[in-house]
Image (cartoon, rainbow, N blue to C red):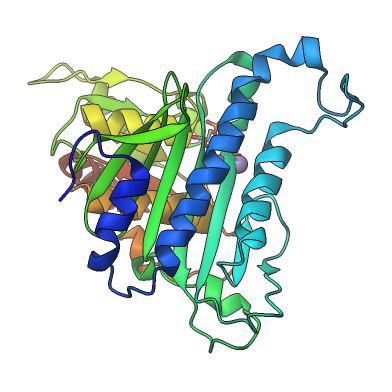
Length: 336
Ligand code: AHG
Ligand code: MN
Ligand code: MN
């Protein structure tokens, strides 16, 4: 039972028994993500001091090379997950290929693979706007005792055993699901502890916020253009409010709390949209469904898509159920 003010550590221990497979491996894995999140949070918070401590590519006062934050976050998550020897493979938006975690002594006995977008919304870093980290966890499909293969990563989103994000915002929060609802934990930076602040998060069924990069309007499919016009019409509870941060994590987080829809459609410039199926859309879709929301490519369920490539992209419509269904209606009616 989720109790407010419980620490994330206590929550993980208490809920371990409710996981489908209870070896403790998944708990240890989420614990490592919690640890890496704290380290990255510390670095993200220093981003504004870049003029003082040196920009990426320069050498800082201690003689250390400064890294770009997305590279830093990538390294930290990979290091934490590999050092503690709890996953058999990692795929990251920042890496060309997946990483086989070399667990010589353990003889590849680990069961889980992790996929990450280490720093989402990275273009917002320089301007002090919220960014995030997204993670997605699967059980491997190849036999334990052998190195992981690509097929362990190319699983449908519906096979995820856990997924979540960290949002480095006005507060830092870790929000995740293991398939039994969505819970949000807020970091108390003074003592470095995450507390359960948002138990059982739910998308309102309807919302009044639409989030899309309208600068691309001219390139959108007709269905999206018509839906945007529908959002702007004066009728009933419309026009809706437009809110777009440009960090998927932050836009999703706000919409889940307030009710809304996030869209990154395909356009005449990029045929498959921009967002990555494995690192962004699948984990967010799993969270959305677990929070009574919906995620679609405009026509079909995101979690049913069979991936064929690690870095493939997909159009993404996600948020309050009734809003996503309405957008799908427009997509069907005006499909070109
Ligand atoms: P990333 O920083 O990991 O590359 O992801 C950025 C993504 C997503 O977070 C955001 O919603 C979207 O790109 C913004 O794209 P536009 O600038 O094209 O709107
Ligand atoms: Mn991203
Ligand atoms: Mn990224």
